[in-house]
Image 1 (cartoon, rainbow, N blue to C red):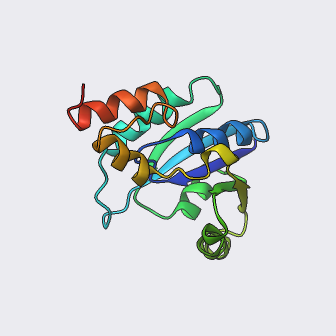
Image 2 (cartoon, rainbow, N blue to C red):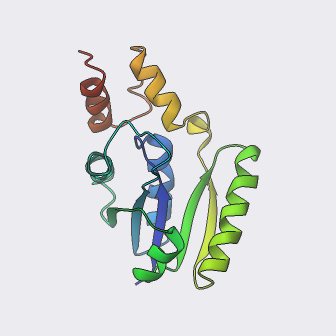
Image 3 (cartoon, rainbow, N blue to C red):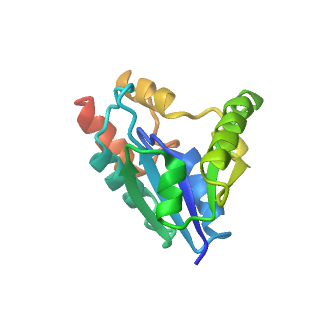
Length: 160
């Protein structure tokens, strides 16, 4: 079974993430979202809430799992015998960081490759911070997040 790991904070998952997952799921037997828990970040949602949103947002895909780790993604990939990691690219500016991460992950686990997939043009402007900021300010984000995420953001920000 060919498994790919999709690492990130996913705080929250949005349509750009889902676009990448849908396309990756056609190339691999299983896609595993791995929430990278970073103690230096202050996420809005707990890892458990993010897992719930990921699974709810991707239940139409069928070959998706979601977990969290506070360890190295390369080690997590080794543990589940993944053959690759996938990351989305929105802009050229993303490439330098992703290239650095891919190189380090290869040094940590040479059995795993990193695939960089360009995000669909209609989601190129999205990131989780923008989604949260617009939601907090009562802007319409319904085109950018699935219903489960929209509701969770409304609940978090006490919006009607």
